[in-house]
Image 1 (cartoon, helix red, strand yellow):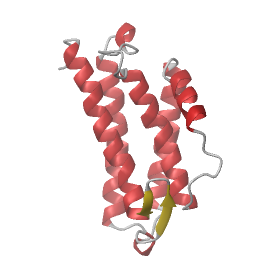
Image 2 (cartoon, rainbow, N blue to C red; image 1 turned 30 degrees about the vertical axis):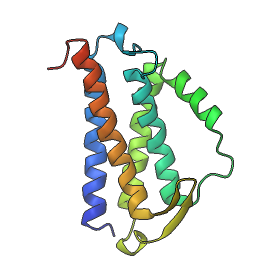
Image 3 (cartoon, rainbow, N blue to C red; image 1 turned 135 degrees about the vertical axis):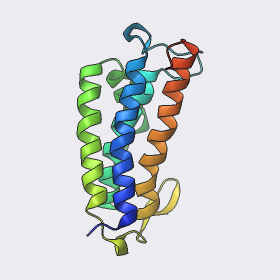
Image 4 (cartoon, rainbow, N blue to C red; image 1 turned 60 degrees about the vertical axis):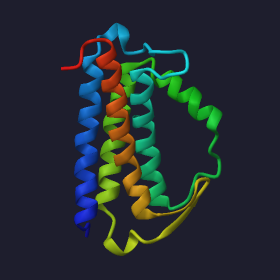
Length: 154
């Protein structure tokens, strides 16, 4: 049975998914793919990352192993394609966030201390659970920053 930590993070992930979507919808449709500079990312690109990483995080938490066949170039290509198609992005964001929330809520307290090897070092399941929460918070802010540049932040 999920403990308070899992319940808190799962609820926040569900809320942050809504916040990311609302932030994106503040931006006029024709500007959602716009980036403030050549070296920066668009709101759609950031939402696509959230959608993809929520699913990848759920899999990592459940499987407790980094995918052996992970291909960064393929990830970036898939993210670029997803960022150009709002209906597909929205469907993935909804489905992967639901999957993430269910995965987090399925964890027992004693599972949180289990170690998982990643390319970024050894992480506990608790750290892996916290990552999508942080990632969505960060990207909500970045998308709202783009909205502020465009003058459409409420």
